[in-house]
Amino acid sequence: MRLYLSSFRMGRHSDRLLALLRAPAGAGAAVIANALDAESEDDRRAGVRSEAAALTALGLRPAEIDLRRYFGRPASAVAAQLARFPLVWARGGNAFVLRHALARSGADAALTGLLGRDALVYAGYSAGGCVLAPSLRGLEACDDPDAVTRVHGDPPLWDGLGVLDHALVPHVDSPDHPESAVLTAVAARYRSEGVPHRPLRDGQVLVIDGPESHVL
Image: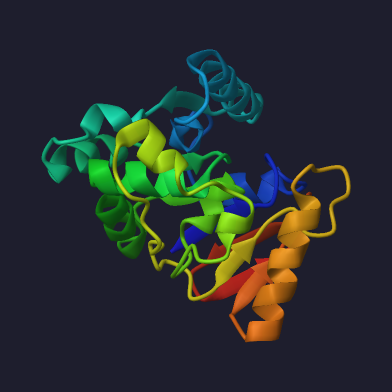
C-alpha cells in the first residue's frame, strides 16, 4: 500500500510523492474534489483548477473524476475508471461530504481494493486523508456532517474507510490555517481519550510505502 497524505495542499515533500508513483513522466492523476460538493459550483471548479495546477507542475496529467456521476450506478463503473490511473489525489474540504460521495459511488470499496493490490497511490490532504481513518468521530468539531443531508438528502456516515488504523488530524499547530485551533483541540481530545491518531502540521506529510511509515 502506498499513501501520501499531507496536512495542507502538496506539503513539503512532493519528491516523495513522485518516488512513490514509480511511473514515467506525464503519468495520469485522478483528482477527486467531492469534499467540495457542498460549496458553490464556482468555488468547486476553482478548487479543481488549483489541484490540477499543482499536479501539472509536478509533470503529471490530472483529470477530475467527479464521483457524483457514479451515484446509483454499479460499483464496477467507478472501479474501472479509477483503475486507469496510477495516482488518485483527493483534496480537502468537508470529510463527511467526501465520505458520502465515496460510499454512494462505490469508490470506497474500489479504492480499498486497488490499494490492497498495490495498484495505485492514494494521495491528498486534509479531508482526503481523514476519510481513511476507522472513524470520522471528532471531526464534527470542524466539518459539518449535516452538509450531507442539505446537499444530498442522506444522513452522514461516521465510519471511515479503515485503510489507516488511526485517525489523521491535519492543520495542528498551524496558526496560518483558519481551522488550526479547532483541530489542535480535536487532537488534544483524541489524546486524552486514548484515540489512536497522528497529528500533522501544515507542511508535514504522512508517507506509507508498504511496511514503512514516516511523518516528514
